[in-house]
Image 1 (tube, rainbow, N blue to C red):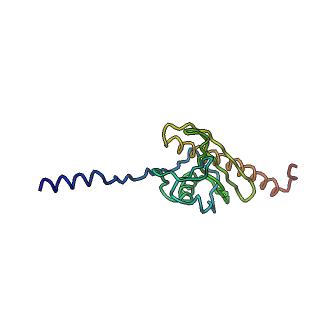
Image 2 (image 1 turned 180 degrees about the vertical axis):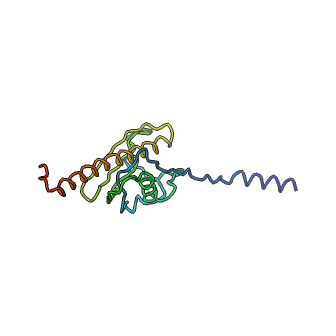
Image 3 (image 1 turned 135 degrees about the vertical axis):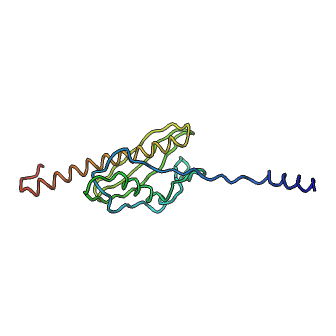
Length: 170
């Protein structure tokens, strides 16, 4: 019986332990002067897995995931930030960390608003923990939020000038 128990313990010690991946989310740091009426994310990015890029290609982090698909994470982000009624169409074209060295690189975010205005962000990072990458990804989306707020203010003021009958500035 002791032998059987010893064999059982040895077998269990050889079985790899399943680690659950760490789940991540993005949180807005400001308020949006708009609401996103449609959000598009490319199919290859629209997964719970967090993608990254190296000089050899694209990969997914093994131990870190989004709380839901990326489109869901971004929709929730913009819903939490929503403060205005102006409607925008938002398309996230690229969003992932790019490693230029073993523990350094930048978060790359490329997005388009209303199929017109495109924004590109490269937020540098030096990694000590995965949380730092998520913070930089959050920073990139926060910058997008700020820039879309500016875009909405400009387009809204242009509409109100044209609606007033006054000539629009060149």
